[in-house]
Structures are given as structure tokens and as C-alpha cells.
Image 1 (cartoon, rainbow over the protein chains, first blue to last red):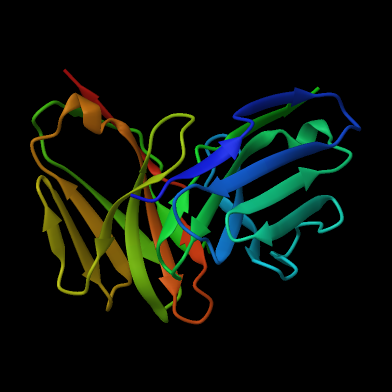
Image 2: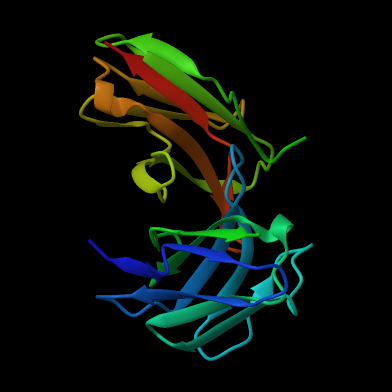
Length: 114
Length: 110
């Protein structure tokens, strides 16, 4: 099946710094990539949807200036958490899709902001 | 009211037993339904899509009830490896976005 990778798998950073998370589709071209956040014992929450070559569409309540998304190619999307704070600590998961309903998930990135 | 609701559990079930979960959704325009499985600290993985006529995959059976707006998942002859969180996911045709339930935690005990 389709493989999606994320890097890094785990990151610890200090408050105020920025963190970049990469999401790659390894064996298919992803026209759409989705970024989710999951807090402990809660559901995945969609943060934004990005289509290659265009600006990401952010969900209500997600600050686009804080969570910068770049989808420069059909196999790579990045999420940058700028000026991270402890409340940004979460599990960030990307998914990639070449068709609307079939989303393939990356393994996730666990971010801890101290 | 949440768009997709699930009983968080945990459901503690002896190995070999049959267990069923329900999930209700609020948007009557929803068109696609899925069950995902998520192991602790891992990404969710698609378990099965849910079709109008219901579908079965081995020990797993999924049903859709549009009138009452719920979907169900039945697991027969449960295995220890079935222990996980089961996420109900709903999507409408209008925007292809997946709406996730918070998940039902299942613990299979030997």
C-alpha cells in the first residue's frame, strides 16, 4: 500500500523556538495533504488541508501564521510550528491522498515544548 | 452536540468474546463512513469502509443505519491483538474532509 513518512518522529524543543515537521509520500503523488493534531485521549482534529502549489486551507481556530504549511511538491508537505509554546505539545499526524477519500497516514510526530 | 460521537470505553472483553461498538453522526448528508484502528501512540490505520449494505471482513462486520444515523462495528472471536482504540470516521461529499470520533478503547483480556 501507499507509504507516507514523517520526520522527525519525536521532537523536544524550548518554548519560543520553531519546529519543522516533514511529511512525504514515498511511492505515490499526493495531490492533497492533510495535517492533524491529536491531544491525549482526544480525537484527531484537522488543522489544515493543502493542495500542491497552492495555499493551505486552515480550519477554524487554527492560526495560519503560527502553523505554516508548505506543499511545494506532490511528495512533500511541511508544517512549521512557529514560536512554539507548551500548549502546542501534541501528536501531529499528516495524511496524503491521491483521491478524495483514501488518505494514507504518516506515523506521526510527537512534539513536546518545554 | 459533537458531529461524531462514540462511547470512549474502555470496553474490557475476555478473549474469544464478541464485542460491538456504535457510533452516531449528526450530519444527515454524510456519505462515507469508515472504521479506523489506532494503537497507542501510533497513527490510525483504516480497518474497513462501511457500505450501505453492510460489509464483513473476516471477524469484523460493519453496519450502517442511515435512518438512525449510526454505524456499528462487530468483532467476533476477539483476539488479544484486537486491543486498540477504534475510531469512527464520517465524510460528506461536499468537502471530502474526514470527521473523526474520539474513539472507543477496547481491551481484550486473556
